[in-house]
Amino acid sequence: MGRPTGKDGPAVEVCMDSFISSVITIALVMDGFGNIPLFIAALKKVAPERRKIVLIRELVIALFIMVTFLFLGKWFLRAFGIQEYSLSIAGGIILFIISVKLVFGNEEEPKNDPKEDEPFIVPLAIPLVAGPAALSIVMITAAQQPKMLTLFAVIVASIINSVILMCSFPLSKLLGKRGLAAIERLTGMILILMSVDMVMSGISTFVKL
Image (tube, rainbow, N blue to C red):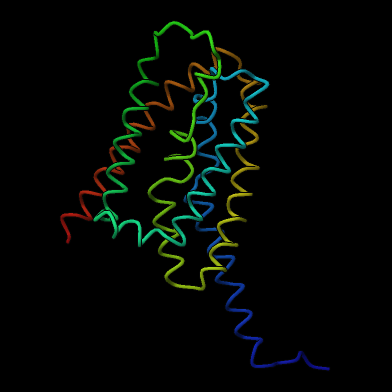
């Protein structure tokens, strides 16, 4: 017997192709592999027993932010008169400040409460995971296909990203203190380049308007 061909067949196939394409695009923009050294540097001062908890918390926050932007992103930007290129410029400025601290080190005395060294929302959830590029892609994708399909794509991409970033912990044990210090400086330099590129991309979009 031949393969059944109904009216819904081609539509389902197109829908699946669109879903897979969305997952791959969002996952690539979230850049899990590229964020591994950034997460190691950001979690360096966090107590080892709390690192996984903090990482999961930040990933959940990032997912919540992306889902919120999926449904309310365009309304939020319009309500506050914010242009999309402003996301790129603001994210670049935040990354630049973070990168300078990584390159030149932090000479402050350690605080008594280790929880004060835990990153909260910035920079892990925003802008490293749910950054301007990821938020923009989510909004663009939602405009091209059903929002529920985009929602599932965001969730699957976030799971893939989470699995990748969980590998940062064994990698941190493998590298040791000196290895982490070297990665921290290198990460700072990479972040400077990324931050400048984000700012210039936002300015370029503004100039073309």
